[in-house]
Every structure is written in structure tokens, then in C-alpha cells.
Length: 444
Image 1 (tube, rainbow, N blue to C red):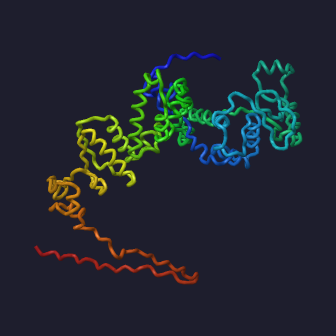
Image 2 (cartoon, rainbow, N blue to C red):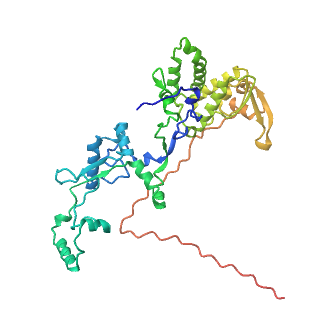
Image 3 (cartoon, helix red, strand yellow):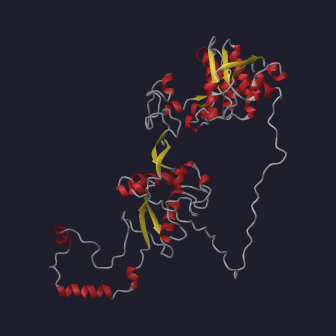
């Protein structure tokens, strides 16, 4: 089947534009569906070992075990391989089923004869009539007169006297496997009770159309030196920066993408420099920690390369690992070297030592402070040249917080097991409270 594609524009590569986002999820990358982690909580198990929580146990249910064998025989789905190691094509069979295809299942111990060709479950009849059709069809199928009570009684005795093998389980049957997702989605629309019971299984899942890339299909297939845009966004920032820096544009390519490539590598370098080299470009913002969000905003300000701007930061080291402090200091220095003024409210010793000038506000906190009690270079605070500053007292070691020589430790005495014949300890006795004296009423 042939398909026609329109000429792509820059807007077609943006999930924020209706021209570029995935039409199924509208650029969100998620859709309302079944939570895969609730259906398959342990993907290291195989299907035969109960990887799918919503399925019956195949070891305890022979009927369902026969259905699993039928699915495996028809689709090539291995039942003894962990679900995590299955190919995406086979995982899709588990999740989305086999469509309208009819599968033949044989129960253990049944004959190997071919199943009936009728596309329905075959049941061994226990009476002379399989089903009761409507009146016209019954008369057409059986033109004999309506049976009397005597004939009905004889037929009932005939059924009762039939051997037990007539009512045994059917040797084979046919069924359709619709898949986990369609079955649960259909069950949520049946009734309110089903919808309430399956509420834990239904939620936001990865878009089945774009697989979370959030852009349209033709734009996601365009490759740059063998990699698509979703593949580059799924790489760690350090690897993505190395890939883009290694691109060699020549001639017409340089005219088209030279400035764009320089801007992208410029911004990625700022993110890597502030210690975010392990993140990916497709990482959702709500999943970031507070420290990661602060560093992303800081890298964005550095990437704009503005000059003559006053930046006020409130303790940017909160939430950062101490090993990332030096990266943060280097980023702040670059921001200063561009011709900006950077003011920090900070208490970290490493950041204080790297500052150009310190201002200590006091003498107290809140409404008891607000005055500049001392100012100077960090070396003046450390050397003790600044007086009247609590910060200078601790930086110069005039005041220290002593480490206690002995620490209080709470040791719990183990409770000895009393002998079985020992009497239980008596309950604690309470002191009897004396009744309060009532004041005598004075004669009037």
C-alpha cells in the first residue's frame, strides 16, 4: 500500500505544534490506558510462571494452560522465557492479542482429532436438541407434531440414563484472544463496579502510536547521520553533546544548520558543566529533583549570554551533591565574566570562599536584623580582620562548635524470657486519690 508524505518543515519536528505533535496523544507522549507495571509486576518471570497478574495460574488451571499452549502454537510465543526478554513483537501479542483470529485449544488427555470448523465453542450435547431456536425455525427443522408429556418423560429418562461420558468436558474448543489492553478497556465500560475494581490498572501509559516520542511518524523517521531525533533525545546529555560536536557540516549543510548546531551544542555544554550530564532530553520535568531543576534554570540563564543583568539566587546549593559545588561555582563565574552582577544568599563554606565579596547581615534574624554588620573579601573574614560579625567569628575559628567527647547512647536492655510457669508480674498500683473537700456553705 503506497503512502504520500508532505514536505517537512521545522514545525513538523516540534511536539508543541499541532503540525508536529503525535495525533494520538497530541504531543504528551502518554495516553489513558492500562498500567503495564500493575499487569506485569515481575517481568523477570515467564508467562507459564505467572508473569501476568491478571491471568489465572496456568499450573492450577488446566483450561487456561491449554489456552496458553494454543496461543504459543499459533504465534510462536515462548512460555518459559522471562517476559522482559521477549521480542517487542511477542510482547505486543500479550498486550494487544491476536485480533479476530480463532485459536484451537486441546485439553490434556483429549484426542488429537481436528477440532470442529464452526467458529464457536463446541459443547457435547446432553439432549437431542442443542439449542432452542425460535418458533419458525423449530417448525422448519422439525415438522413433527409437538411432543406429549409422555414422550417428554421418556426423553428425560433417556438423558438421565445416558453414560457419564456424555456430559464430560469437551475434547477441544476454539476461542479468540483479544489481549490485555483491549479486554480491560472493554471491561471498564461494562459497569460502574468493573470500573471501580479496575481503577488501579487504568492510568497514564506510553502512547501506543508514537511510543513516547511525542512527534508525528514521518518526522520521527528522519535520520541525522544514522540517528533519529527520538534516539538523540534518549541519549545522556554527555553522549548527545559528543555526537553533535563530532558532526562535520560542509557546503550547503553548513549554511542550513551551522548556526543551529552551534546554538544546540552551546546549551548542551552548559547543562553538562553544571553536573547534569546523566540526564536525557526526553526526561519529564516533574521527575526532576529540586537541585536538578535549579541547575537547569541556571544553565538556561548562562546559555542566553545576557550582559548587564542582576541575578539574585537564594541558596542554589540546596539539594546539590557536594561534588557538584565546584561545577556550580564555575558556572556562576562564567555568568559574572559576561558582565553581570550575581548576588547569592548562601551559607555553604565552599561558595563563601569563592565569592568576590561577602556581606554579613544582622545582628539578628528576621525583624532583629536587616543591617550590614560587616563586609569585605573572604580572606579578610578568614584572617580575623573583620570584627563584630558572627560569620567572621566562625570562618576565622574564633568560635567553633565543639565536637562532644562523649555521646549519649541509648542502650536497650534485652528482655529475658520468663519461664513458662512463672507468675505474671502484678499490674502497677495507682495511688488512691483523696476526695476533694467540699467547702462549707456560710450561713446567710
